[in-house]
Image 1 (cartoon, rainbow, N blue to C red):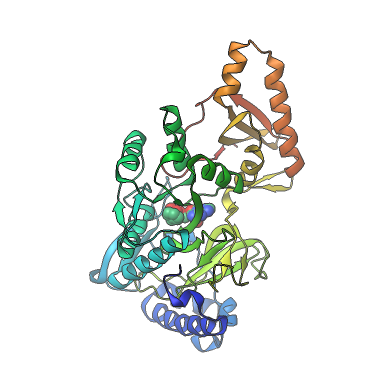
Image 2 (spheres, rainbow, N blue to C red):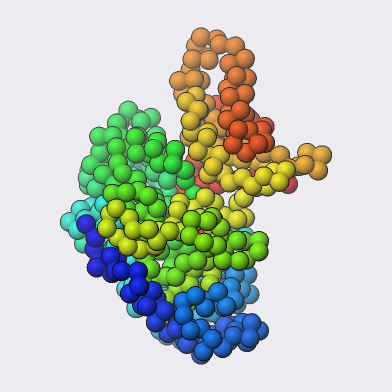
Length: 436
Ligand code: DLL
């Protein structure tokens, strides 16, 4: 099912619509936000220079630092009285980046999230268990209002208190579950640990995102919970969840809400535009936002895009799964490594549990990765009960090293831990701990 005809609009009409909306947005920011006026002046760009969508590459980028430098409301394009909501981006240190929404912005957000829920398999009349955090983070409220708009009975459970989540899933019989992949896996494992079968719930679909996750992780979650798990993408600086959503029919890339966002991919080093299919940093321009429009925002997220139509019938741009953030990429002896790629290999090792962290260290001026993994219960109990030798663990270490070396050409140090040693998270998992 496709909620809105616009998701099937032919590409030429979509590009015309995007261009019209881009011009309106540029007018808006030029006249209402002194930062953009200054940026355009510095780049010696006049609005009349933007004659087609292709000309967007002439516009300067907007970066997270620009948002910070204009804290809190410097980049807003409306008066304070017109705001109906304020959110902040995640991040633990320093001042957050602040984003605002008018009533119309909230309505558009609801609409794109409602579309996204349908894209993932949700239907009006069903029940949606929302385990994204509520609060300044956009995940909870973003999914919440989209779900209500669609007409689903929305359970605003937020993250944490996993036993209560399990009780509510059993009692309310939701069809859709939303949360970070790491937390949804945590719910499934907690069910198993208390003797409940996570395959036997009413759940059919998962809307999982807000952090990078691998295809292997998807397979595992789908198997454990007997659901279809689809990827949802977004970032608070641009909107929140709903910018792009994978369809449950094809699970082959995330459908971008093209009528509200223009998406490009650039080489993060040369800053040159890349072609369809080439992997680089996602750049997003909002096309309809009133309170907080963004022009060529550098997301820091690595992915590629395609406009090849999807078998689900949508004609939108699709983006690949986000591999990771440029700032989460680890460069070890010249090789670029993303945690989510390590995850893909790690989850193929049957003796270990799907939890891991990468500790980055310096050894004699060289960067090294210490990969922390934990063995699963059956390996652990076998080793204790049958008094199996230490060499079994060493074999496991070698096996993991071999797999990772094959992929990233650098063998990490591997630290094997007992079950439940690696922290579990209720929101976004922390995969990289930098001790350099
Ligand atoms: O994470 C919005 C969101 C909420 C998306 C719920 C999906 C579901 P922020 O806290 O501002 O907003 O973090 C945005 O999270 O730049 C990516 O690096 C990462 N991210 C978001 N979705 C995905 C995804 C929300 N599906 C940052 N895959 C983004 C990989 C993701 N990374």
